[in-house]
Image 1: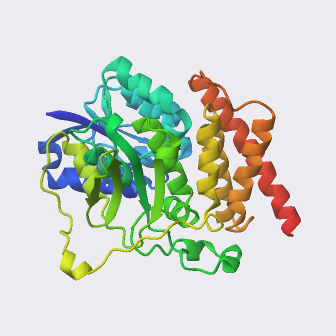
Image 2 (image 1 turned 30 degrees about the horizontal axis):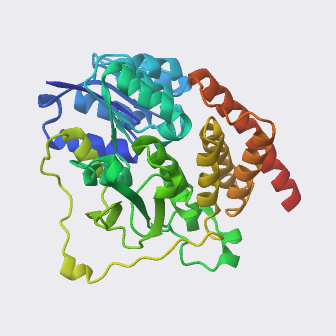
Image 3 (image 1 turned 135 degrees about the vertical axis):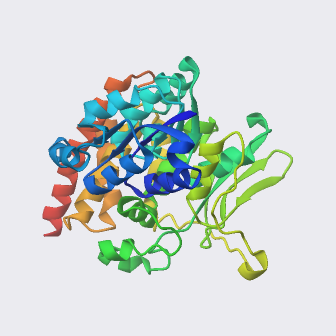
Length: 395
């Protein structure tokens, strides 16, 4: 019986992972080692009991008493905090879902790879901040990274049986998010509620807003560079409002392989869960006649400055990805708190990249985990300062 762990079990990807595991038999089919979550302690306890997990961990230490009470008498161990997450990731498991949002998912994912596990990676920030470290750990310890982003799962599947040197280009599709048809001059007035009204995908709050700003796609562009090892100029982004084609791979003979499917995260999750086999999944089947047409358009650089910043990060490499992601997370926090406007998030990130690049701290060809964590910390401080400066200017 396969041993599995789910990091970020109470989030959108985590919940859908739990759904697929329970549909496949739950404890009768899988031995669950660890499940982790954030503040939704009641739901974390329900998941732990449904899967009969060995241990349940909440990321925040303050939630431990509530989790302990919720699982009292169940025989399930409980713990809390970042150190507990790393310890749980070190427990032997065959398959680990990394669905913690943000840079917090890096250490557990890297730790799981160091145990030789197959890492189903929904946490794109891990590759953005420390791609070389993850890929080196995969090679050194016999683990395997399987992408769970719908786009990268699509690319992975399109490349099955192909040689990477025959790839001419990789085309990431993007829905364009909730604000894709707004006039440019209105973007500055967009509210959190506006940015959350995604037309196609049901996702968590932060990733949905990142979709509207295209920071999510910017992260995916960098992730593509790190995971597949292609040159930045081989990576393209195209707006595809229907979200039916999840990505495409173009080869040197002119052929383009496209991965199509309903916009349902259970497909890439299920693919990673059952790989290298394919299992039946409870997702909608496409009716191409009903779809009638698929449309595409080039992304507007003025509307989506995050894509230009992704190009700068790939040019700099080194610790630029860690700085980019940390600044993006703080900018998003400040937007959610009403301290900066929607259109100012990219400005905050650019301010941080410019400042840290000028200081000479980003272009580091060889780095370790401590370097990544230190840059993450520094960039968060600088992003907070940049956001505050913009708030004062706006006020």
